Image 1 (cartoon, rainbow, N blue to C red):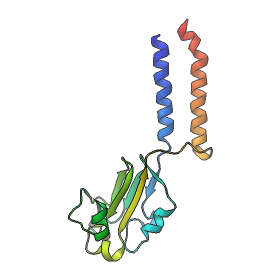
Image 2 (image 1 turned 60 degrees about the vertical axis):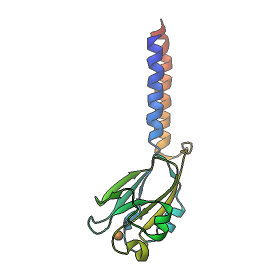
Image 3 (image 1 turned 90 degrees about the vertical axis):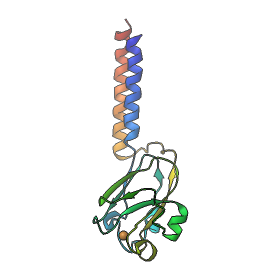
Length: 158
Ligand SMILES: [Cu+2]
């Protein structure tokens, strides 16, 4: 009994690890990073963000920052209403809840005049693993594990 129970836990752990691989890390602005006069609206257009994905803001520290704001503050570039300012120059934000998210730069008029503002919508569910590239490898490895476990199961039960 105990053996089969721990086997099930192990299988679930392996599956959890396999699904966590599908989280995506987005470099905001790609090679431009978090910078002046970049079109972040266009950058977000072809992307779908899911809970668990990460945003990486790359910039020279002391020149820019990243402020998490609400929709109103985003529209009007109000930096005082920030509920968290990141300043490291390589800020990584893990998207933890679904919904609309807003980020602006709090330096000078970077938000108003230089377009340092990013708005995204985070989706709740991660899509089913696509049958391509590296995810196929991890999934088939997982199945290999499970098959191996089940073929070994009778030994535990005897
Ligand atoms: Cu800035």
